Structures are given as C-alpha cells and as structure tokens.
Amino acid sequence: MNKAFVREPDPTADCCPRCGSQGEQVGAGVLSRYLTDEQRRLLAEPVNFCPSPQCAVAYFDGLERFVLATALSRPAYPKDPTAPICACFGLTRQDIEQDVDEGVATRTKAVLEKAKSPEARCAQTAANGRPCVAYVQKYFLKCRGAV
Image (cartoon, rainbow, N blue to C red; front, side, top):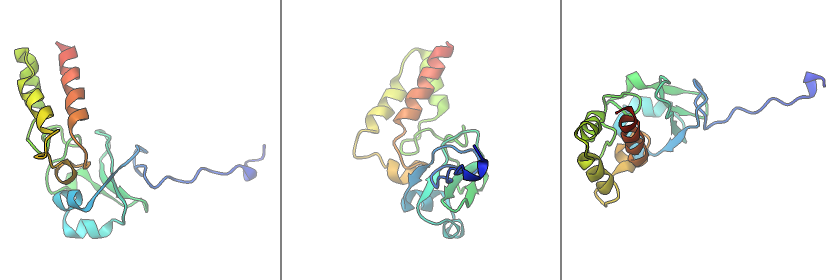
C-alpha cells in the first residue's frame, strides 16, 4: 500500500511528549503546590503528570509544553525517590524498608488506613493528585520480594 494514503496516528494530548507515557490529569491545587505562578501560566489546561520515574518531565500540556521534575518547587515522588511516597502523611521509602527489615508493616498499614480517611488530601498534595496506596503497596511488595 502506498504510504501517501496511510493516515499517521494523531498525537495524543494526554501522553508525555518526552517518553510517551499515559499522563495523569491534575488539578489547580496540585499545580499550585509544585509549580511557580510563571510555570503554571506556561501550561494550558488540561495539565497532566508524567508518572514514569525515568522521564525528566513532571507536568505537560496538550501543546507539548512541559516542566521538568528538576524545576519543581518541591520534590515529587516518583520523580524523586527521596521524596515521601505519601505526600499527605510523609511516608517514605525508608519507612517501608524499615517495616520490611523489622518483619512488620506498622508504618505502611497506618498510612494505608489514613489514606482512606477524610484527613487524606491526595488531590491537593500528591504530585499526580491521586492516593498513594498503589505506590505504597508496590514498593512494599518490591522490598518484601527482595528479602
């Protein structure tokens, strides 16, 4: 078939322009926590978070404009592995590793329970505007498998 008649796929506005990962749409509360006013003005709505830990892009819009993770006003997990996995309650990878080393899940379970409570403010505090439960469980299982 002649390539002149093959339609190229349209770029998807919700995929990271750098790595192609499916973006996670975020609200203004999240953006005001991680971006300066100037950075927010550069991005058109809707704004997405790139969830790939390996990608340098943190936030991007449908016009392929982006803000790098190194330019954020505060560290954001999973872009920065030293940042708290749980932005609401401060649980870190080190806390999870300590639970696994001690053979308990005290800190991990406590945060997972709090994440279900009205105290959780994931939509405003997490870099992707979503609960940390999946990240916490994934990292806990990863650490437990390494034992």
